[in-house]
Image (cartoon, rainbow, N blue to C red; front, side, top):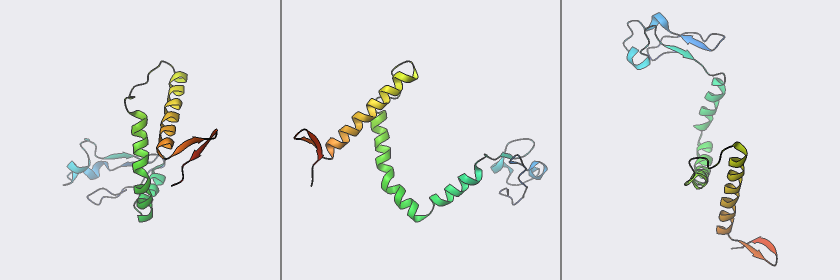
Length: 128
Protein backbone atom coordinates (compact mmCIF):
# COMPACT_ATOMS: atom_id res chain seq x y z
CA UNK A 1 0.00 0.00 0.00
CA UNK A 2 1.35 3.44 -0.87
CA UNK A 3 0.43 6.72 0.84
CA UNK A 4 0.05 10.04 -1.04
CA UNK A 5 3.65 10.94 -0.08
CA UNK A 6 4.97 7.77 -1.74
CA UNK A 7 5.70 5.81 1.47
CA UNK A 8 5.08 2.09 0.89
CA UNK A 9 4.10 -0.51 3.52
CA UNK A 10 3.26 -4.21 3.21
CA UNK A 11 -0.22 -5.56 3.82
CA UNK A 12 -0.20 -7.97 6.77
CA UNK A 13 -1.79 -11.43 6.78
CA UNK A 14 -4.77 -9.91 8.61
CA UNK A 15 -5.18 -7.28 5.83
CA UNK A 16 -3.88 -4.39 7.96
CA UNK A 17 -1.49 -1.64 6.89
CA UNK A 18 0.25 0.64 9.40
CA UNK A 19 2.29 3.66 8.31
CA UNK A 20 3.07 4.69 11.91
CA UNK A 21 6.40 6.55 12.23
CA UNK A 22 6.45 7.25 8.50
CA UNK A 23 3.71 9.82 9.06
CA UNK A 24 5.83 11.94 11.44
CA UNK A 25 6.90 15.11 9.72
CA UNK A 26 5.09 14.22 6.50
CA UNK A 27 3.99 17.35 4.60
CA UNK A 28 0.84 15.56 3.39
CA UNK A 29 -0.22 14.18 6.77
CA UNK A 30 -3.32 16.37 6.95
CA UNK A 31 -4.62 14.66 3.77
CA UNK A 32 -4.24 11.19 5.27
CA UNK A 33 -4.95 11.10 8.97
CA UNK A 34 -5.49 12.94 12.23
CA UNK A 35 -4.43 9.91 14.30
CA UNK A 36 -1.51 10.53 16.67
CA UNK A 37 0.12 7.21 15.74
CA UNK A 38 -0.17 7.76 11.99
CA UNK A 39 -2.34 6.28 9.32
CA UNK A 40 -3.72 2.75 9.70
CA UNK A 41 -5.81 0.85 7.20
CA UNK A 42 -7.96 -2.25 7.66
CA UNK A 43 -8.74 -3.73 4.27
CA UNK A 44 -12.07 -5.43 3.68
CA UNK A 45 -11.94 -9.21 3.19
CA UNK A 46 -13.24 -8.71 -0.36
CA UNK A 47 -10.98 -5.73 -1.17
CA UNK A 48 -9.45 -7.37 -4.26
CA UNK A 49 -12.88 -8.25 -5.63
CA UNK A 50 -14.15 -4.72 -5.00
CA UNK A 51 -11.13 -3.26 -6.82
CA UNK A 52 -11.73 -5.60 -9.77
CA UNK A 53 -15.39 -4.55 -9.97
CA UNK A 54 -14.47 -0.86 -9.80
CA UNK A 55 -11.99 -1.34 -12.65
CA UNK A 56 -14.62 -3.19 -14.71
CA UNK A 57 -17.12 -0.39 -14.05
CA UNK A 58 -14.79 2.06 -15.80
CA UNK A 59 -14.89 0.14 -19.09
CA UNK A 60 -16.99 1.72 -21.88
CA UNK A 61 -19.19 -1.34 -22.49
CA UNK A 62 -20.12 -1.49 -18.80
CA UNK A 63 -20.89 2.23 -18.76
CA UNK A 64 -23.16 1.86 -21.81
CA UNK A 65 -25.12 -1.01 -20.25
CA UNK A 66 -25.28 0.76 -16.90
CA UNK A 67 -26.62 3.97 -18.44
CA UNK A 68 -29.20 1.97 -20.40
CA UNK A 69 -30.74 0.16 -17.43
CA UNK A 70 -30.05 2.36 -14.39
CA UNK A 71 -32.86 4.89 -15.01
CA UNK A 72 -35.56 2.18 -15.09
CA UNK A 73 -34.18 0.46 -11.99
CA UNK A 74 -34.07 3.76 -10.11
CA UNK A 75 -37.60 4.60 -11.27
CA UNK A 76 -38.89 1.19 -10.14
CA UNK A 77 -37.38 1.65 -6.69
CA UNK A 78 -38.92 5.12 -6.51
CA UNK A 79 -42.34 3.69 -7.40
CA UNK A 80 -41.97 1.01 -4.75
CA UNK A 81 -40.98 3.39 -1.96
CA UNK A 82 -43.18 6.38 -2.86
CA UNK A 83 -45.08 7.24 0.29
CA UNK A 84 -43.79 4.08 1.94
CA UNK A 85 -40.57 4.95 3.74
CA UNK A 86 -41.63 3.24 6.96
CA UNK A 87 -42.96 -0.26 7.38
CA UNK A 88 -46.69 -0.37 8.01
CA UNK A 89 -47.01 -3.42 10.22
CA UNK A 90 -45.32 -5.13 13.13
CA UNK A 91 -43.54 -8.31 12.21
CA UNK A 92 -41.59 -9.51 9.24
CA UNK A 93 -44.30 -11.72 7.76
CA UNK A 94 -46.91 -8.94 7.42
CA UNK A 95 -44.41 -6.48 5.95
CA UNK A 96 -43.08 -9.11 3.55
CA UNK A 97 -46.67 -9.83 2.45
CA UNK A 98 -47.28 -6.09 1.92
CA UNK A 99 -44.06 -5.68 -0.08
CA UNK A 100 -44.90 -8.55 -2.41
CA UNK A 101 -48.37 -7.16 -3.04
CA UNK A 102 -46.97 -3.67 -3.63
CA UNK A 103 -44.43 -5.02 -6.14
CA UNK A 104 -47.14 -7.05 -7.91
CA UNK A 105 -49.39 -3.99 -8.17
CA UNK A 106 -46.57 -1.88 -9.61
CA UNK A 107 -45.69 -4.62 -12.12
CA UNK A 108 -49.34 -4.91 -13.20
CA UNK A 109 -49.64 -1.14 -13.57
CA UNK A 110 -46.49 -1.11 -15.73
CA UNK A 111 -47.75 -3.97 -17.90
CA UNK A 112 -51.07 -2.18 -18.41
CA UNK A 113 -49.17 0.94 -19.46
CA UNK A 114 -47.20 -1.14 -21.97
CA UNK A 115 -50.42 -2.50 -23.51
CA UNK A 116 -51.52 -5.56 -21.55
CA UNK A 117 -55.19 -6.29 -22.31
CA UNK A 118 -57.78 -8.90 -21.45
CA UNK A 119 -59.13 -10.39 -24.65
CA UNK A 120 -61.45 -13.42 -24.89
CA UNK A 121 -60.64 -14.49 -21.33
CA UNK A 122 -56.85 -14.29 -21.79
CA UNK A 123 -54.21 -11.67 -21.08
CA UNK A 124 -52.43 -10.47 -24.23
CA UNK A 125 -49.96 -7.71 -25.03
CA UNK A 126 -51.18 -5.22 -27.61
CA UNK A 127 -49.05 -5.21 -30.72
CA UNK A 128 -47.85 -1.89 -32.00
